[in-house]
Length: 270
Image (cartoon, rainbow, N blue to C red; front, side, top):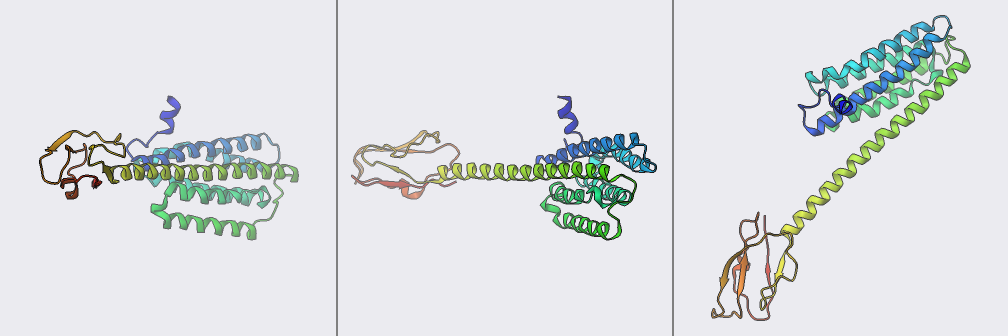
């Protein structure tokens, strides 16, 4: 229960559609903090001269990211804006210090997917702006930064490259899975709504002689409303009209007397 309350921190006052994105942002900040903490620990233990600067940047990112959910009180976009600004600067500084051989530029691709997920289609122009900045930073790092700055041995850099590629692929897979699952849930909800609407609005046929519905009315709570006596002209037998709960009136055609051997169609409207 405590974990759930931590995940929902700062999202209680927002609608469910927005709160769902903010909860995902909270989880993302903690994942980023955990990854940065792992790299910082390994780099602090590495005796390579100058590597402490990269370790300090990772440690700072690990401390700042968990505090980003505190910004939810200022609006649904505040925390996401700060997260991406800090993340873009953090990635670029580490790439400059270590080189493009670490593969940290893949994090920009991952961040672009998160931009659309956190901002939503309601702010697609803002998300597009962050995507353009990410593309520009990837190109700039490839042009301006060497493959290996010499701060790390080639074997260590290749190990970082493998770890970053695995993390990026796993995160991108999770984002796509989440988006497809939400789309499937929305389609299922729309299908259920349409099915219910068709059931309530579909025509119902009644046998004029027996006064019995050919199509079952299990989804209607009907009560007898009016009866027509058998001595009325053109009628044979007794006919009952029903007023289903939730539906206001029956159509005018349903109020006409039914003749012998004729099927009368009753259209129920919302």
